[in-house]
Every structure is written in C-alpha cells, then in structure tokens.
Amino acid sequence: MTRKKRRLTLIGLGMLLLSAATALVLTAFQDNLVFFYSPSDLQTKPLAADQRFRLGGMVEDGSVVRDGQTIRFTVTDYAATTPVVFSGILPDLFREGQGVVTEGRLNSEGVFQATEVLAKHDENYMPPEVSDALERTGKMPNTMRMPESTSNTGS
Image (cartoon, rainbow, N blue to C red; front, side):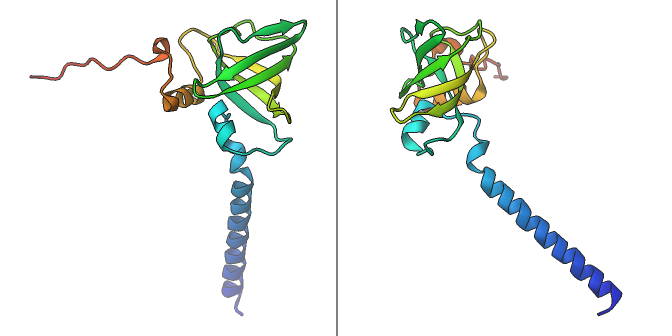
C-alpha cells in the first residue's frame, strides 16, 4: 500500500471507531436523559428497583404530614399520585398546591424515598417538564396557564 492509502485507511478506521463509541454512549444514556418522571409516567414505565430518578408534579393539597424532620406528602399530576417521604429540611418555598421536583428512589411499597426536594421559585414559574405533564393530563390549574394571545389583525 502506498502512504496515502494507508493514511486514508487509518482515518476511515478512526472515524468508524468514533461513530461506534458515540452510538454506545447515546444508547447508554437514552433512559437517563429524562429530567423527571410524573406520577402517570411511573404507572406506565417500569423502572429498576434501585434506580435513582426525579419525580415531578404538584404537592397535593392536604397531603403534607410532618413528623419531626420526616415529611410525608403526595406528588400529583392530577391523573395519578405518588406518596413521597423526605427526611431533612425542606426549601422555604415548599407548600401544598405548588410545583415540586424530588430526587430519590422508589421503594418496594411504591413510596418515593426522596433525598432532595426542589420547590419552584416564584408564583408564576413552573418547571417546563411539570407544566408539560400537567397539560398532557388536561389538569393544569387555571392560575398557571399562559394567557391567550390577543393581538389584533387588520380587518
């Protein structure tokens, strides 16, 4: 082989290996690229017993029970609910009827064991993923809906 053909062969082989490595990485991350699951998603998508993930939705009204530093509450997307247990200090903005994203694992009884709780930061903000999940179920609270455009077009 000439020097040019050998160089082209090595470059082609390098590109092939790089493509294969990229495909393997993207396949491995396919299920882990989701920012969070809604309670409805948990009913339809099976998860491994010890898999860490995020659960997002609204804190159900009347569901928060405090027992020292252990807090029990229910996350809902208004189509399904998931009970959550968290030990620690909650964010100041955490309260019933507000958007929340929790991180942790689902135990064998179907209770989400949260290791971290994130609350929304003001009255008009909701994480886009929570908003999309609530819109899919048709249960988006009216106070959270974006106003319809009222632009006038020429007549």
